[in-house]
Length: 202
Image (cartoon, rainbow, N blue to C red; front, top):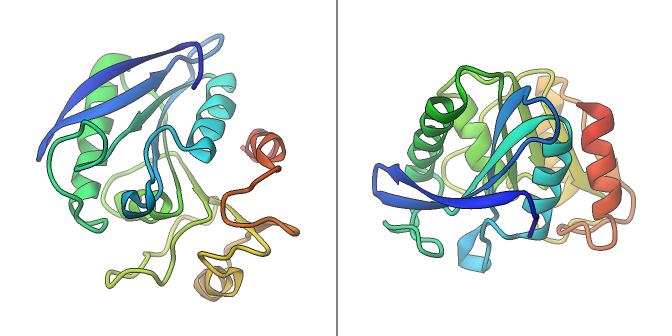
């Protein structure tokens, strides 16, 4: 995990949410809430893709909040397949704004977390949206359409969420997708490139 960070417990609708907070480097220019992958497959806020995104965004001046959503780690409540988790993210956003003020907001997520972030963006205003290996077509609730400037990054050889499924979701929206040739779902061996891509495209 990153050095310039601390842990907080954020009051959520289903109880306390264990949250890693990564400080902005240099002048603070925004707040980011970054959502973890599916906890039923072991996903938590210490996931390497989540932490890579937090490091990249912190270097751009964002204070990054990485919650364990309901039922994950020491967070209270029960996993809700991306429904109640949206309420958790909104609670973390509200907490972050109380701490940091009304700074520009970025929502981000990896896999299941991308699904949650996209659904949260359909509920509240945000200035930026980052979806990595976003879980489209995996849940009964469809992944909503997203703003045209959303940064979508996906591995060509993703074995969990096929690239074709993401393209089928993105195509009607005219939404660009950044494809990592040869990369799998977890961006193994490509995390440095992932961080560079986030910073270059932000």
